Image 1 (cartoon, helix red, strand yellow):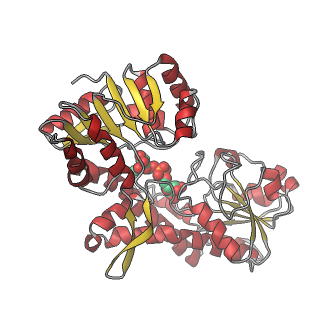
Image 2 (cartoon, protein in one colour):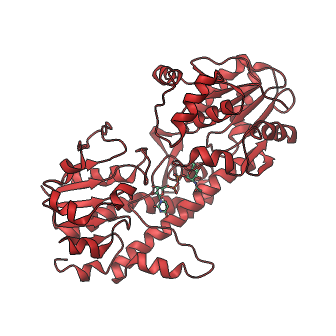
Image 3 (spheres, helix red, strand yellow):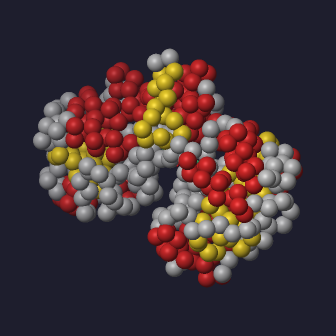
Length: 442
Ligand code: SAJ
């Protein structure tokens, strides 16, 4: 199948890179979004999110005439839905004492509805948004059927999850293997033809529900494995062991690959997707459920470590370094760092946060420092929450000259103990039970 014109609905972290990559490969792309300021920004050739390489891609796409952002869809050969699937704000699910978050499918529903008037025989519709199992067949197909056309008979319908890593989206979009799950084999083939426009990785065809499960399984697998690493950090702390040392030794075993503990799991993928399984089948998911709970509770362990380093937190000044959900990205959504700040404040600490990737972010209830210097100057403790490259590269002696703090807590194994101790800092690291012994005050 040939695709000359496509509509991409949702111009966020996935939709925009996808749209601009198609445009770069000669496809005429209409990018649709409900936010008029995003449309204006993009049509000027500028972008509203930070992702390496994206700015150039969008500028080139707009200048080439192959990409246009708009509020309304047009008739096209294919429609790609790449809208968010957040949680419901006002409602939790409940099963046998388990409470869990519920997916809010409103954006997927309205994107599918917006396609109905433009759908023609022979078209292809692809859902990319991460969704609970069976969304393509049970939710999207019936909405599209309102056009009078039937998925798999009159038009093709497929699920193709994005699996790119924020920070490397532009490269991974092209190089990663791509899964296309069709409601029929012909739909999977049509989806393969579309993505073969730019995908250099292997394209694997399957059915729609398998593709949905693959996506959720990948992120759930990672969440469960990070949960065990976080649990190890608490055990190491209890037994006077440095978890980072223990993990590096265990990982020498050829069949062991323990991930890294940290302040918790954030972002809009790994901390979200496992809930889709729990919601769909709570009776079958005790491990997935408890892993989510372990990771969500990790900010409390950070605060416990800070309390041990500093004593009672009331009126203590804490400089928080990093609010992003992971290193070297500007995405602050679902960030465990936010939760840490709120917990510290609830104990009476006075927190200033420095986030170099989004210094002016409007974070309700969090005092954002205008600079690193401002954040650390009169702090009692420095708290490293994100392993940004620029934090790793800090010179301990230079930092010592800028702050009156002489205690620090590293939650991400970003700093070398000895270097900071030599610069006069008392050094605590998350999950390092040895720092209890090494640091005289603890
Ligand atoms: N984290 C740890 N310890 C680790 C690894 C990560 O605590 O050892 C934390 C990070 O700090 C972060 C969170 O987990 O808060 C998630 O970070 P990540 O880099 O593992 O993943 P994401 O959420 O940025 O992207 C994931 C990727 N999925 C997998 O690696 C299986 C990506 O390929 C997906 O496309 C993306 O989710 C998505 O959109 O679903």
